[in-house]
Length: 236
Image (cartoon, rainbow, N blue to C red):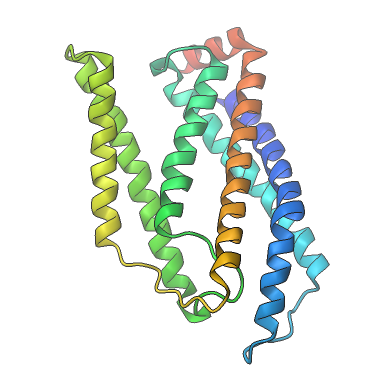
């Protein structure tokens, strides 16, 4: 397990670095535009830190976040690798893709991120709790769908119908959760075009983070296939 955690840490840091550069080049201009519009409002206030300090802190936080994500992906690959087909590169990429869809893309559809100037600051705690709740439901739903497909396949159902059944369970569960959970209730005072540019750019950064982390993790694990098998087998 330690090998997977170590490689996940390195891969996640690489993904976080790639995302930090992407945010600086792509998202920062959009943020600057949103901040300029926010400062024109009556509620504008002096920031505690300069924009340069905020960018540096954001970059460091992004790398740390990527490293944390990489550790989680590495641990997940170690736990489920014996249940997945293919080599470690394929397994890592598959786990990363599943994590992106269930923990990031689907929650984005319900609770997309917003630039400064959108949403009441007093409701940040509520909005964060709703988002994390939806992420938890999505991850559990994805796991349940996977378990259902494996169970059906073990009972003799062909692979394709088994996968369709698991995917259907996930889609239905998330559809119900999306209808039952309240919306964020944000009041958008910025131009809609600017808000959606920020949201799509943010999603792109997240996709880059997960893609780089998954590919680097799979590549690094693939360099020592025998060591990975021996280590997991010794702890089974």
